[in-house]
Every structure is written in structure tokens, then in C-alpha cells.
Amino acid sequence: MTLSQLLYILSICRIMLTYPVCGVLVMIASLTNEISPLTLVVMSLERYVAVCYPLRHATIITIRNTGVAITVVWAFCSLNVLIRVVLL
Image 1 (cartoon, rainbow, N blue to C red):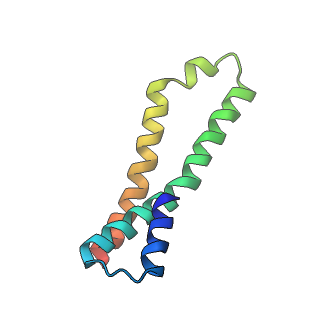
Image 2: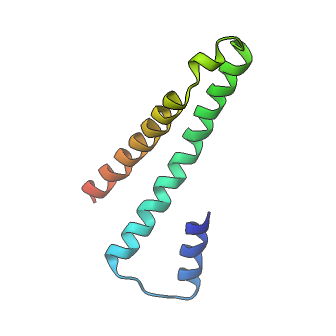
């Protein structure tokens, strides 16, 4: 949200950025825009396991599994953004 506010203020003030700086800012904004819904999906899956399998929740949802899930979400979204940059 901070990055989108920064981009908005830069556009309102008509501050000209170099192309690489603008590209990096837009790429990060796009990445966070895509990561947010996928993170909510992963969080809802964790809650589903907690409600439907309360006795096995501690064995299914571990710190390692949570780290893997976050890494997969970031990698999937980063790959999508990087493909856009390469095609650009």
C-alpha cells in the first residue's frame, strides 16, 4: 500500500523518474498486487486444516511447511512478473 501511495504522489507532483527506477517500482507494485490474493488463499487453506483436522493441525502446519508455502507463492508471482519484464 505504501508503494502505491508513493507512485500516486510521484504522478501527482509530476516528478519524472528514470526508466529503470520507474520500471522497478512498477514491477514491485505489480508483484505485491499479485501476491496479496494468493497469500489470502494460503491463509484460508491453513484455517481449513485447523477447523477440519484439529487433531492433526500441528503435524500438517509446521514452520517449515509455512515457509515453503510462502516461498512458492513468492516464486510463482515473481516468475509471472519476470516473464512480463522479459517480454517487454
